[in-house]
Each structure stands twice: as structure tokens, then as C-alpha cells.
Length: 109
Length: 249
Image (cartoon, rainbow over all chains, first blue to last red):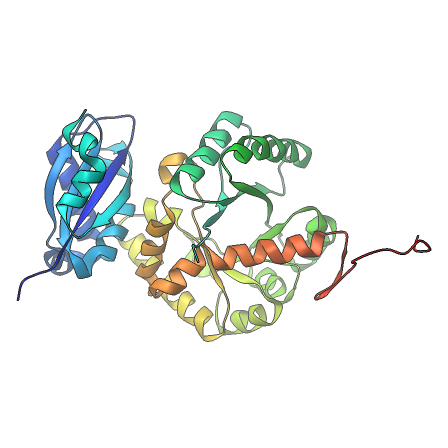
């Protein structure tokens, strides 16, 4: 059966800029800390796009795991040992809808 | 109907007005329509009133409502009663930080107390058990759960906290004690959007609707109830003065 997915647009709220790897590691660590490796394996977490300058990212998750991932995202307080808050801007069933809404932030203009 | 979200536990350094302003603006940006600054009873209350007044002006432009909240940390039940007699009619929300079992019991049975708050880190002093819940359900007091410790604690301490919160949330549900989830944030980076707070509340097994109520319906009910009580036209629950005759002085 095809896995239904959701795309989540995120805003990184911090005075600092982070490399893509630092951001994604922090995200995975938060999911693993809260739900363990078994729980994390069910989330289907993947980074779709990341804009370091704008502090903007789009991730993909399994649709039944959206609330778990939202909780994990909310639990992040630091990335690369620097204080940060990450907020969910929108959740969508298609990437197209997010591109329509946040196209400028994704492209960085 | 669209939910109105509230964070009734912002804890900035009250001597730093700029930080207070930043947090109020952040709350507006995150989607809150009602906020409260937590004022400790030890703080100079005339200064706190000035802060709230200034914030009201700032928040008016952002359509955010501000309510006044006092945190009481009495050492004994007698001291709690003294505090309540002194402050109840001056603040819209009264929260009691229950540092001892005697205080917790007195706070739970006193209808003047709105929120029961327990120390997050010291698990031996979380006195929210079935007896406490039964008293709280009769006096309309709510259980307050702060999100900040969930964000700042790590490892075994957070695991233990989640376990305690899960047990307390289940007891509260059994006894129909409303749960209020608040941030307890000391800086803007510890503030979360209402839906994120609700998602964190599901970690202690609140269902989605109860979690959303904990950041919207339940805190709003406390504020609305107390605003009505503090209104000079209020006489008793359900009875209010509509009009005064010429001979009523």
C-alpha cells in the first residue's frame, strides 16, 4: 500500500545560521530522544529543502506521524549548541501547495 | 468556531521591560490572543501593574488581550489564606505553587484558587493525587502543566517528568479537573505555537481535543469567570446588577 505523506514547512527562529546537516541532525535527534529508534523509523522523516539564509525548511513525514513529529520539532531548543526555536508554518498534502505559499522563502528571494 | 489560544504563564524578567515587550509581541506572532505575565507575590506589585498597563497599550495594536496573574508560593496553608484574602480581588488569575502537601490540599479546596502548579523537577513534591483531584474538582481549580521543563530537561529527568505528567493527566481526567497547559517561558525562544504546545501535551496522553482545550478553552474559561466576578456589577454566580434605581445608594 502506498504510504500517504505530509509536507511540513518549518521556520528556524534564531539569530544564528545553521548548516543543513546540523539542522537535520538536531531534528533526527529530537525524534529519537522522544520516540526511540523504533518510533523514529515509522516517521518516514526526510528533508526536502533547506534554505540556510532564510532559516526555512520543508520536511516530509508519514501522514499518521505528523503530530509526533510536531511534538519532536517543538522539543528542539538548540541546534549545534546554539539556542533555537523551530516553528511549524504549515502542513500540506502536496509540495506544490507549500511552494505556492512559501516559494520565495524556499528559493531565497 | 475558530479557537482562541491563550498562554497564561509567561515568565520574563519583570525588571527588563524590553524582554517583556519582546515576549508579548512573540506571543502575538505565534497566534495567541490572550497572555498573562506570571508575577511572583514577592515582586513589587505597583511596578508589575505599571508593566501590565504598558503592555496593554503595546498589545492593543496586536489584538492580544493581557490578563493579570499572581503566583503565590505560601509556606503554610495559613499563609495561603492570608495571601488569598489580600490579593484575590486584585488579580484575574491566582496560581498556587504547591511546595507542601498541606498547601496543596488547602489550595485545592479553596474556590479562590484558579491554578494548581507543582514543582517540575522535584517529583516528591508533586502532590496531585486522587484526593487532591477530588478537592480540586469541587472547587473548580485547574491543574497547570508547564511546558518549559519538558523542553529543558534531558534524559532520565525528562522521562520521569513525562511519566509523572501522564499519571497526573489521567487522574485529572478521571475527576474532571480541567488541565491548563502553559509555556512558563522565560525568553522568546522557549515559546511555542499553540498547536505545538498541544502536540507536546499529547506526550502525556492527552487526546488531541483535550490538548487543544488545555491551551484555549480551559484558560479562557478561568479568565472569563474571574472577569465576571471582579466586575463591580457581579453579585453572585448567575446574578448581576443590571440597573440601579434612583434610591439605590
